[in-house]
Amino acid sequence: MSDEAEERATTPLVDEALKKAAVAWVRVPGGPALALWCVPLDGTLLVVSGPGEQTAPGLAETAEAEVTLRGDHGGRIVTWSARVSRITPGGDDWATAAPLVAGKRLNASGSAADLVSRWAADGCALTRLTPAPGAPLAGASLPDDSLAEPPRDTPAARPARKPFRLHRVRRR
Image 1 (cartoon, rainbow, N blue to C red):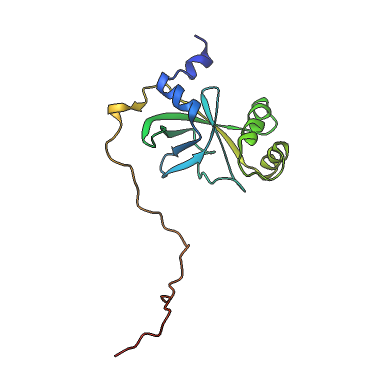
Image 2 (image 1 turned 90 degrees about the vertical axis):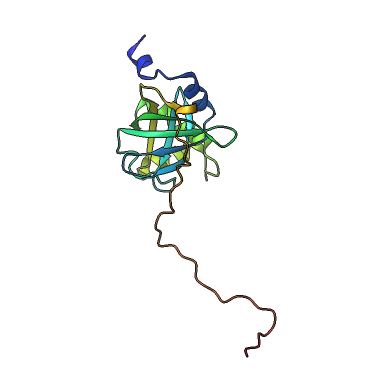
């Protein structure tokens, strides 16, 4: 088995879940799990983030992450450790991966080539999540709790408005 094949050695469950993945829950060390749009390619997941794209704080700078994939029923089916590597503009990997991801990008303005050029110019991060060697959590080894977290603080707020009334309310 070659070094590259050993590096990508995964279980059949992870392989099948990767092929069907469109959204993955990705957690970087010290951060919350984020739902990220992704594209599968050769046993890995590709994620684009940055200006004008989805926000994934810390993903481009870390070397490892935890990935959770869900099945058709919406339930968690597998969680695995991933090695994270950034694909830089101008390289062979960029020439292969960036147009593929751009072609799958929904609601993008312009052509796929324009989108790839914008990603390179704006400093967007194209990252590859490769399953790390080791056994994934699946089936009975998955935690029983929901992994739900309380809402994060945000400066966004809705203004409190007076209730709408069709008629005049008498006060006694």
